[in-house]
Image (cartoon, rainbow, N blue to C red; front, side, top):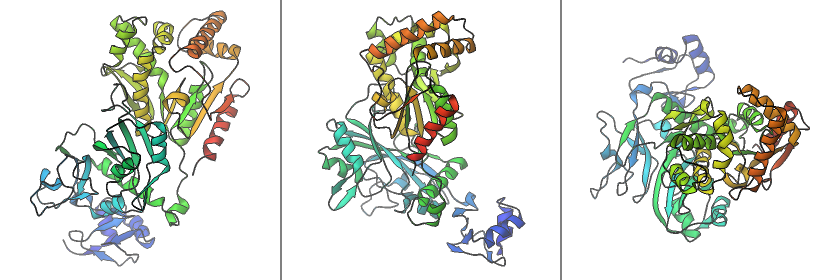
Length: 484
């Protein structure tokens, strides 16, 4: 194709009208082969030159983006002099010379991105950008909380400081199975050689399995070892957005001077029944963009599953087996978690009188709580989330950077409970509402498994003395105070 004016190339690519493209060029937002061209007479060859707008390729159709599950024993390179298998040998890419974005060592497996897009490679791999990555790690022996906290604070190995963003205990596959203290979900922004293996060696642990499960917004998903898939345009754009956000974190950069504050997460909200948790949670999720998980829905969904299966709460063994069956799962819709049983979305069925009457009994079963807590922790680890319940700050997320505990007098909460019942189509007298609240308080505060307590370090808000607007304003101020 012949050399053309930049504004015409941008217009033909559907980026903007010619007039808008001219404004982009003059503003210094357009580059050709890495060099900014801010004169309207500038030209380029769309077949040969790499043309970018704000660092993103304009003619993206010439590039290919592949997510691969790298198996162990495969090198993260394009070729090997010794003839060992490489990641590029696992992907059929006629007409495109792909290269891996970043590395996974020979003994590690998991998500790796292959592309021929140099701009995206630079965004995701340059040390100053440090896009967040997550790894599922099996170690030879359990690592306690002190050891996990030490990794988050940072350790030194061979003169380098190594630091994880977070280290959480999870189940081997992120399912409803019991969390195993020998399985960790490790998140970090750095990309030093064998970083996780080295930092774990400092605390006396040996890595048995290391699998990368996330790069920024891109997840490994259901890809098996050696399997690959092409990314969607939306996924590619999400990777670019993640790289640019990470770039903006660099101290002293122009982007850092104008970037939006980073709000702490996950956030925990606890409190007794009808204390205003849902009202506050939805307001904070809307204000700060958190994904909301009302963990009570999970216990209600389990209650529904048990009632359908005819398993009584008195049979703890059968309830435990049902909880471990993996039938309960979470999806996200409009930034709010919904609950499914064996693929059926049951969220809108969980306020029935039968579920309402039985949920406290099923929620008190220790093994059931343990199974659901594992899912809740994994949910929080994978998103900018806000979790609501009775044991979030004390059990599920004791290390959450912001924890709220709502309280209100029993009479106030009983009145709210009656109003809620009316909204849900139930008929409940004032005395019934008082008995309901009193009974729930007794069950929640005296159960052996995860009793309702004020979490250590929680911000206590009396929602009975404040109206909803004042309660929300106080919580917003607390989060903004901790934002960076």
